[in-house]
Amino acid sequence: MNAYIRSNRMNLALAALVITAVSFGVMPAEAMAGASVMFVGSTTITQAFVQQWDTSIRLQAQQSESRLMKAVTDRGTITGDGFTINNLDAIEMEENTVRHGDTEWGDANHTNRLATMKDFYRALPLDRNDIPRMIVNPVTGGDYMRSLMNAKNRKTDQVIYAALGGTINSKDGATANTLPAGQKIAHGSTGLTKSKIIQARAIFRANESDDEHGEELFMLYNDKVLQTILADTTLTSADFLAVQMLQNGKLAGTWMGFNWIPYQGLTYSASTYYAYAWAKSGIHFGKGYEEGNVSRRPDKKDLWQVSMGASYGAGRQDEKKVVEIAFQ
Image (cartoon, rainbow, N blue to C red; front, side):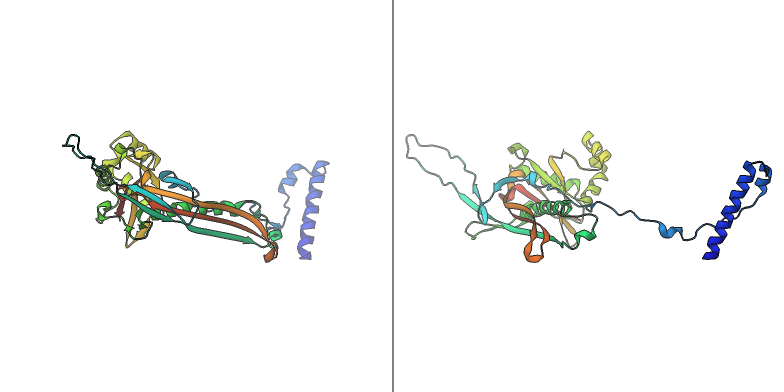
């Protein structure tokens, strides 16, 4: 190592002498061009290289907002362990054939359903001894809370999705209301095709639960549906909106009578996905509470704790307002 340093010093000194000689005219510049000065560069300089540490925390790709909340009937804040959904069956008029006859009363059939509340919670700790060892503090920087907020919004959609095809009991528990076969479209070993969309639209029309009745209809889709629809020229060559969909690569706005909502949380079982179309008044959603908290835990050596708690419930108001569409 010492020899290496001495060699470099000698070369530097020689180079300095040559430059000085040329400057004072002692050595012609032409002679300098022929001079050979050997310089041995450092082979350990890479040991002094540094790496810059990231000073931010970036959340991985994930659904961050609730997409289904806007498509249901919001019952607001719920007090109690559930909320009821009251229904009244259709009433028909009868012909009056008797003048001045006695009044004959009909029967108004009232039914009800009970949507139960479920509680959800998640807490993230950060030991106080870990903080000095970190460039970024995910607690004070808000990263943990943002992640929990995203989780809360996804849970909202999961609760609503479960209500679309789930069972909802009457208030007394005597009746279990399930989605009947007439409200389900079989997969038929095909994707979510044009014919299935038309069939779903026809079911709503037959049930008087479409936009002609003042309803707003919604349809879920995932990446598989997107591929099927954008590749179907019988759909995408039909109108200007379809052309826009091809340009943007997404199902936007109202199309074929439905507001399309992207959702990757569709149930997948036995090589089959289950999407749903529904009327906004057909699904009710209630919130017991939502609370995020950042605090010290004196019982845990004063570590930081970031937590999120919530209570949600959802229920189907009427089977005629929901259609299940299976596809592969």
